[in-house]
Amino acid sequence: MISSKEHTILISPIGDPGAGADFLDPLRSALRGAFGYETEVIPLIDEEDLWIDPIRKQYHSTPILETLAILAPPTALKVLAITKVDLFIPILTHVYGEAQLGGKTCILSTHRFGEGLSQGAGAETFQYRIEKEAIHELGHTFNLRHCPDLTCIMHYCRNVREVDRKLNRFCRYCAILLEDELKKLGK
Ligand SMILES: [Zn+2]
Ligand SMILES: [Zn+2]
Image (cartoon, rainbow, N blue to C red):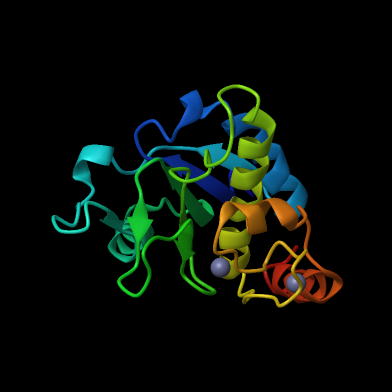
């Protein structure tokens, strides 16, 4: 008998991922809706174990993805780590997240999602930013690339205004590509 825990999307908070992590339950439903997999929440890495670049005072996301891939339990089809620390890759000043294209792991930072929001009043926008960028990064692990459609969730956003402008859905083209990927996985 196949366990109900077979093939989950594992959400892995690193320390307190921000905002008291109130966003986790709605995020789990959003991910289930987008990809059709159940989710589990299991921390795999401590914030103290992350390596901070001493010059940039930021965290390089690529080695974190590699560590997550090693630590991921076999039940996890994909792993989404969420952290409040500021992430970068060497060619960019910062990133909201990074993913292994067609791979197992991705990471999202909530660090910059409070930009332009007033305390309290922006909770819903903060939530939507996390959901959109989490689905975006997981989309990459399902082999989706960046999409030129400004409203598609796979559009690459350079700032939060662009994140707010895009919709919480895949465009028709990306939806078909995702469906094909999910079919290959037996969905
Ligand atoms: Zn992307
Ligand atoms: Zn698209």
